[in-house]
Length: 75
View 1 (tube, helix red, strand yellow):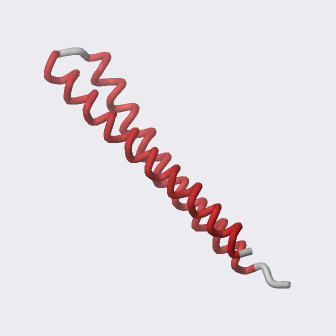
View 2 (cartoon, rainbow, N blue to C red):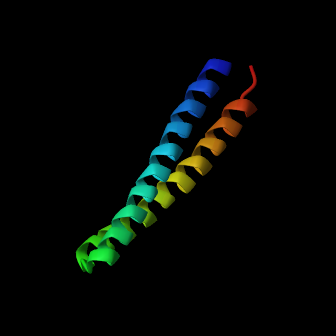
View 3 (tube, helix red, strand yellow):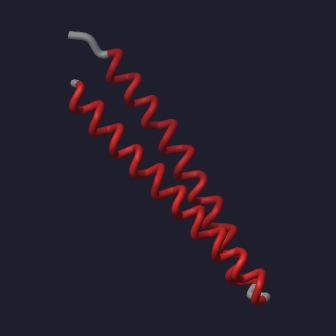
């Protein structure tokens, strides 16, 4: 069971990191669009920030719940 918990934890960590990187990319796009006056790029950057932050927060919470449920299983 310990191996399954570790695998779930690693997958969750990868999802959180990818979400944070997505949000960081969105910040770059937003400010780049702001600098050049490109409203489309600003909008894309805002969307990426929201989606990346949501991915990081939601996946972190779900993985925590999965790990807690796995630890509650007794044989």
